[in-house]
Image 1 (cartoon, chains in turn red, orange):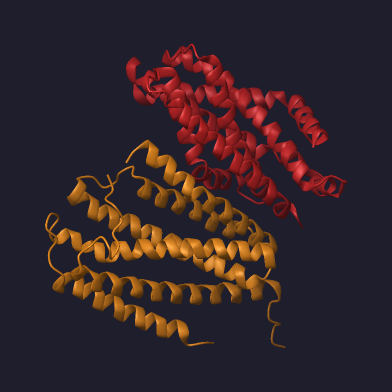
Image 2 (cartoon, one colour):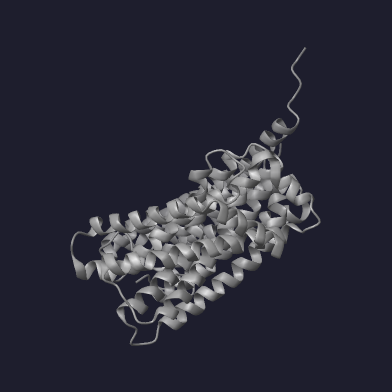
Length: 218
Length: 221
């Protein structure tokens, strides 16, 4: 699994121009959301958490759809599966790499959000934890569906179609937790949303790992 | 070809007509909502049967992954489409009922939201099935996607419940007066018979298509 992860990270490092492009895409999306609301500072600040996660979600469809791109060329996936490594390890290697990538994008979008929406917070570590947990929730099912949709035509449409309904609870919990962190949390509610996120992650990281073997099985 | 689905279709239609007629003319008016409430006689049975067909789809998906028997794949295809149909019906009936009673077409209630989320999830799986031409892949992928989507349902339900809640308690024969029982039960069985008939007929079509894809009949010489 470690070598699978190392391979993925190496590939991502070599194609870092793509990561940068996705980042710019996410930042551009955040910029556009503010035009949808208008120059109302209070409203922008109130909805900033939602915009941050929507921006990350839209960016994730780009990175997840691309994540199996290298495997599709020259039927490299079949070669990978022939190696004495289980499909599960390949899955976890890829999912962790996607997770890291999404978390990097999410954390890099935070300063953009702070500048554009004036949505700063002192609880940086909690915010980072929420972004880590939320992007883990996106990457586990996203990697599984990425493996499916990369093998068929019109993958760009189908991946969001399959992924978006599924991650509703993760999105809801992440947005709630983030906005409580930004807007203040007098009742200490953020904690229960973080627990929900952890539960979502635990369920999908184990379930998708179990099912991945069947998906790539020929 | 068995005649069972056609018999069920007739039986279901009879039950549905009888139940709806009783609901419209025989059952007393509800105290607060008046005649609008009579939509309950189709809405609640649709909801029960929608839950049944979703559970059936999950069973088909698990059964296919364990047995690799394509009869489960055909049944999965049928139940996915019937579940989509019932979810659309539920959303329409619910909106018609909600507008006069709650004043809005839609509300972010856990049950409404769960139905809508699962509707979109199943639409995605139906689309996936249409995009994959290779039968084994189509069968495995849609089973995997069905399992993943069904696992999501309780999480969606509880997360939305914490988030916001207006929907009245679920109606069941124990929460409503006995005069409401007959139309509710008749319609529930009517819907159930129709649903089983739809699934049987649709999976017959799916099985025939699969046979055609794997071993097309030889051209007549």
